[in-house]
Image 1 (tube, rainbow, N blue to C red):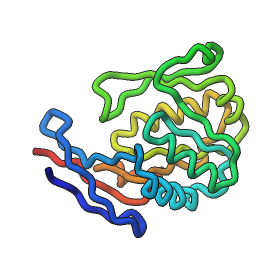
Image 2: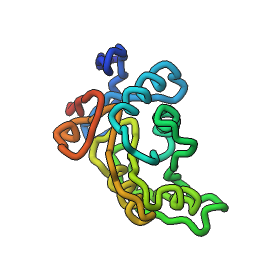
Image 3: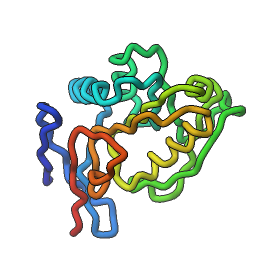
Length: 179
């Protein structure tokens, strides 16, 4: 297997290079179960989002990252945009998005509790990787619909052309590899 080696603010890490179809390979970044990596990245991202009153992420790989960022900022709660509508979310809000890692469009759901948490607050959108910006667009729409202000958008990695976006912060960039 091929690997892409990178340094994330002093943390050396190797990402497996995986094909996703259409002649494209990605450097696969996975925080699931990676405690030391998640802690390091979360603490570094917290420095980038100082001043935010609430953190939001999309499930699933952003969950543990948002947990660390919110903890570092002294926040008791963070908001989670779910990828399926749970029974307790009947009075929440939703948006439809498309991202590079999902084959079809998907809907992000925000519970009424999390929407109320965001209302009137400066919100940090936090996630593991930005590529096409599809998931980010959905999170931005949810924040605005909930009555919050998108204060900062921060990611561990910016993939491909996303690294050129002036409206985001990130810790390191990775390529999209075309075969």
